[in-house]
Length: 256
Image (cartoon, rainbow, N blue to C red; front, side, top):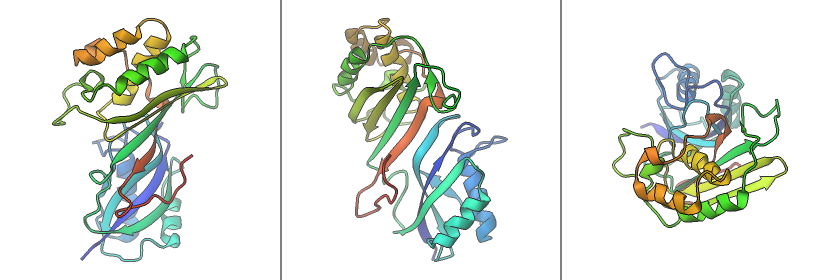
């Protein structure tokens, strides 16, 4: 019988075509599966906590895999796996879990951060959206409060996805200003494809005065992706936390 493992990791998504394996494209899942299969000398498939799109980062991510080997949770194996993987991925820890534990379906919430730099910075071009236009952060946060009034976020979902429902429960959403950098935090039980970037792009329109708070509410009520703002660039988006029931899995890495 095979042993199931959870692997905690982080990655810079700049040079990846997202998490998920794709034909003729470099993916985080593909690199991790190749590394595990090569080192363990057995075919290993990896299941991630969810998709991230091309250019999107994860400062904390969880995936699971099954192996016939029972000692892959030892620090020495983590070191070997990190040595095999490229510079854009780091493995924090590998942990044995119950055979029913699932990295995607077992998660009860996920948290994303989005970063906007209002001053050009060559060291953050890959990890934030450079947007020098003045933004009304207070008004943007007023729009964020509207999100808690709804559960159907069709207006912020990528079109023609295969999900059964566009309902999500948003538990946290706010903008913070730190010097020249803006940080958006959003936590929910689940996210739709492109949802965070669409929300960011639309709240930025509120911050620019192009859309009122009431107009933001009307965007959600319309349940029409065409009524919302354009999606913010991928480079500013980070998956930063995934929460599981404590009886299933407790994260070992501290939250930044």
